[in-house]
Length: 137
Image (cartoon, helix red, strand yellow):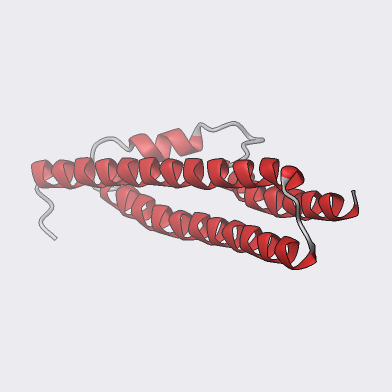
């Protein structure tokens, strides 16, 4: 790899922009699933469900929750690779903004990704409760 500072700085800028775009896509995907599952969970008690329809609705909601969780896992893996690349570039630059930022985080730091992955599981549970209560009402 050519270690000319201007080339490294340009590669770093490109990698950071790419990571930022990935974060924006991830946020958009989260908004999509959150909206869809909130509407589905909110509408479930108002639907005249019988057992086959409820089972189908429940299975569809569980599938969406699983797909959301899987997509978050995939985004996390891609992000980890991108940031490893950024950190490798920073090791060759005079400043290491991302490394320093990561080192300065609070000791009891909870990564957004950890909290974020709980939400699809919570919706899966909430949808299960919603379907059961609708059927037993």
